[in-house]
Image (tube, rainbow over all chains, first blue to last red):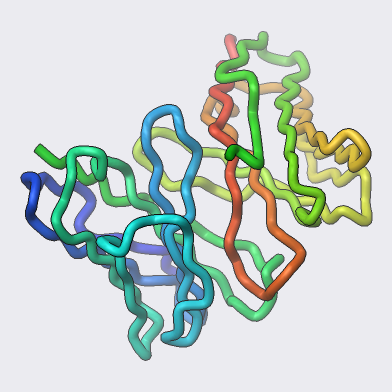
Length: 114
Length: 114
């Protein structure tokens, strides 16, 4: 089975712009979660989607949004970018039926905001 | 509020010896715990997990111990190999709701010296 893919892998934007990141889960997986990783911090949970519905949301401002399509692919969008949004954005996919299902991470998108 | 803490940012051990990575948590509603390993430029990969109904889980060279009364878990790697050099994250899942949301620690960088 192909693993979780994320595009693009690297992105450079300037403050005030918006950005859309994409995540394709493992075939058959219905859950996609997004995490932000910054230096010195662990992975911070952004949101989780299951069957096109947001199932949970972390403590991030409304500039961070996401969606999931019928084929389980997911996108996250960040509007009005700030310098502090520079981070590695990771998505993880899982079957989604149980919270103890193993989740598999993609390689991440490295976002740099100038 | 850091609910999952890895107080040692780094650990260095000799090849063949035991590596012990520690993790503390504050929320007594966490009932499922995981360890992930992360190499540079890759996403985290699942290593091992443990449910709160157990106090030990073993998988090959990796053993996770859970001390619920102390809200502490540890990952033992025996014997350590140079290929184990990576960042290790512990993560916890909350017992309420069927969501894949994980709360991660900040990570511990393990270096195994040949």
